[in-house]
Length: 26
Image (cartoon, rainbow, N blue to C red):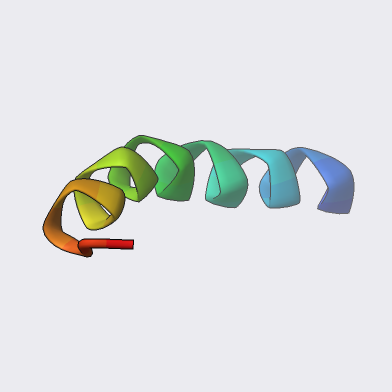
């Protein structure tokens, strides 16, 4: 399912967001 693949991609990116926020002063 395309939607399922999109969710998997998003789920793989979400955990990395907090790390980027910590590295970025903003």
